[in-house]
Length: 99
Image 1 (tube, rainbow, N blue to C red):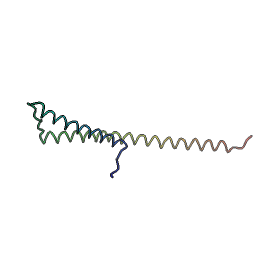
Image 2: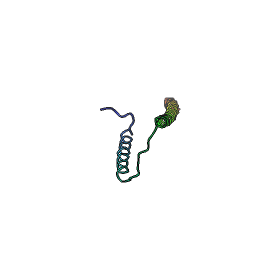
Image 3: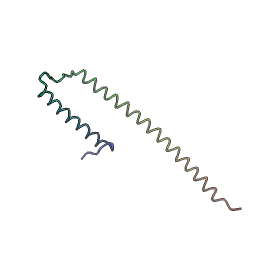
Image 4: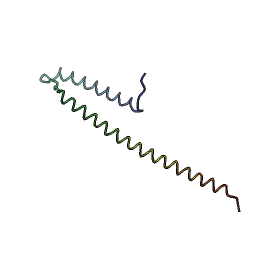
């Protein structure tokens, strides 16, 4: 069984599957109940532009998340260095002889 890339992939796929089934059901209802209904025709250019828009939005979101991850990783590294320096300072203070 393939592994999920992210922890929330399952919820995402369940929502998308629900939306797909709902749209199929509504499409069927529209063709059977509405006598003048006809499904809209989507051209190749419109479809490709829609896919490009989705890809660009995904790329923009991923780039923002990657930038945020870099900032947070840098903050963690700096905080670790600060904690280590404080621990070294505490060890140095504890090792001084009592007067």
